[in-house]
Image 1 (cartoon, each protein chain N blue to C red):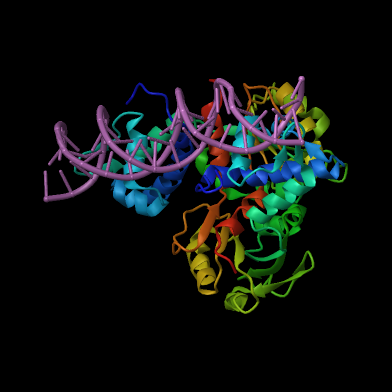
Image 2 (cartoon, rainbow over the protein chains, first blue to last red):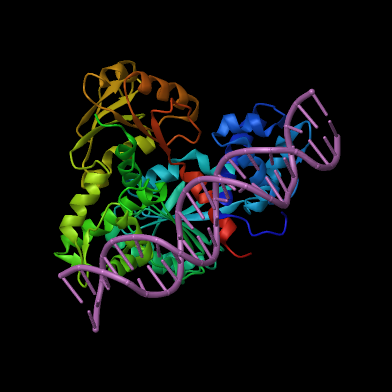
Amino acid sequence: MRYHRIPDETIRRLPIYLRGLLFSSEQGRESISSRDLADFVGVNSWQIRKDFSYFGGFGTRGIGYNTEKLVKQIKRILKLDVVKKAALVGVGNLGSAVLAYPGFRMYGFNIAVAFDISPMKIGRKINNIVVENVSSLWTLKKRGISLAIVAVPQHAAQKTAEALVKAGVKGILNFSPCYIAVPKKVKVITIDIAMDLARLPYYIPAG
Amino acid sequence: MRYHRIPDETIRRLPIYLRGLLFSSEQGRESISSRDLADFVGVNSWQIRKDFSYFGGFGTRGIGYNTEKLVKQIKRILKLDVVKKAALVGVGNLGSAVLAYPGFRMYGFNIAVAFDISPMKIGRKINNIVVENVSSLWTLKKRGISLAIVAVPQHAAQKTAEALVKAGVKGILNFSPCYIAVPKKVKVITIDIAMDLARLPYYIPAG
DNA sequence: CTATGTGAATTTATTCACAGCA
DNA sequence: TGCTGTGAATAAATTCACATAG
């Protein structure tokens, strides 16, 4: 299957496997079967095997997958094998929480820069990062930063995205509760926390 | 199509449409075509029409959809037509940001209770809500709260989820970076912000 | 003449079942 | 024997094309 196009859904699941494997690896586990990984991450074992098969054989029949090796492979596929700097735009409540969030490191991310528009925040140091003026967003290009997290109010999201694209940013994680239009070459992933909550009641039986 | 099973993907998109329509409605727009809505929310027009068709005809041929009517319909489908109380567990950085987040109201949510395990936080008032001891999670049942947001550290997530299920909670929005196992009758939606960021580099051409 | 609504065609993803290797 | 890897079968979702209603 090595020569097929990789399903988007497979890419979406890879970080889930990675998360589980990193944990499993930390626990000192050397290898893990698709069945055990399945129980651990909440995905079917055949789905896991199929997903890995798109990239070729990662496992050993009769044994399972070598955790460390598999972690390396997935990181390579996801291009997480080198530490990546990311910028944050908008240091409000949510933005500050993002800055303080410890979970980015395990994937090789380093939130290295933060921007805000408010004079109250510019120049302040939050989590060891000095907040800069959004007007200097353009400097991202020469700083070699191509990933950004947007946590600005809805009304500023589109303009922010456009400035980021102009600054050479290629990937945006958008926390603003709206669709942002960007050129096709730029990838946007939107997280709308209220929207996700809004999906829950549907699945809950009357009551 | 009224008698078909509704695709999960359709349900996932309904809140996207709702978000766009609420905005459009606020702007005073009375009706909107699937094409205009498409441009606004970033989903194809035929996808939008197909999605709505599962529930029967919402629109008027030649005109489009009445925004206010459509908002009502989607809210009804998603069971968002009555204000729903939700509980927050874990008032750390992320939890506090969630408490302060203004976006829940538009979907009819009211984060009415907050819990934490830290004596430093218990009793403190954050965003007009007094933080309670997690040991009183069980009171949720008699308070009629069946939705919860989990923003505790990874190691506490599974235990927290179990306590919530015991307290009668039927839907969980999980911000902890791990899979949590719950009975089938309970719906969990997990948001792992680092994991979503981890998906971006894959889509970015080498550089 | 415009824009919805929907069967049919196509594409994409999941699930199965088992051959094949350690 | 145990567990991977993968074609084939099934299921699900998207896209198309157009009949149909205002």
